[in-house]
Length: 332
Image (cartoon, rainbow, N blue to C red; front, side):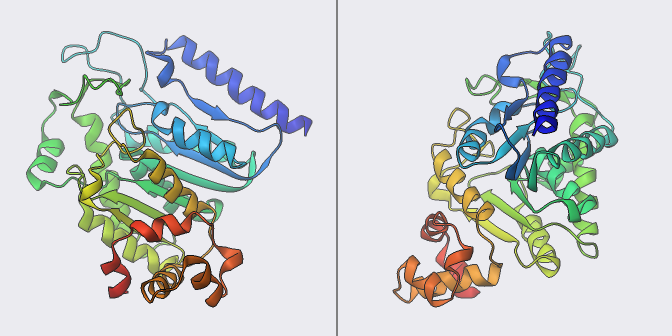
């Protein structure tokens, strides 16, 4: 216990000292840690999105802490630094993928000291990074949650634009009050994630990977969902406890899906669905079997009891099954 206390104090102090030296752009961009006074059964490590900051995972981080988990949301390299950034002086985002990969490996090693099982996750490019880490260290990761992972874009011309041009661009929603990160970036800083995403899509066809839960929104025009479905199908061959969930268009959930302040009015629904995966221990086939029982008129409780799954599912799973596209269950 004394060693655990020493570890978490060191994490907090070293991170604060590093971020004080940047200096930090905004307190919302500081690393977020939710630590219990003792090691926990599960520890969650989350990677925020491109040009954003740890604030994106504060709501789900608090919810999972309240559920009994340790949670780490470290500030990514080159992010969150104070400065007058523009096209002539772009923010100091890495243009070498190795910087992010070494960062992810370091924090995975830290997370493993704080709990029995490590769950990782990320939004957008953070989801891309989490997918890579799931391939790189599958034996060290219990589960991964990929929130709208930016593996590739929806428009091949835009992807080509990102791959070729070195210009500076600004986000269309740069003045959104929920955006505390950078307003723009040089394209080469984003290009490396397309390259890493392509590598991930190829590796998962033949290599082991940790179980993943991919969550996307039909209203999200940023990511290519067909390739994410391929990622899920290929992962399922290695890890039957992988899931895929697409939020229907009626919910109007944006790419920045983690917080209300960034446009997701169903933030709590997303958190509940994520908790359902973390706290359940069933395969995709078993999930579809529960759904099939419900479509036949049984309650959620009766369905899981009939299938002898009561001890292996979270009560939050009923929420996911209530909003999942029923065609997926029927097709399965």
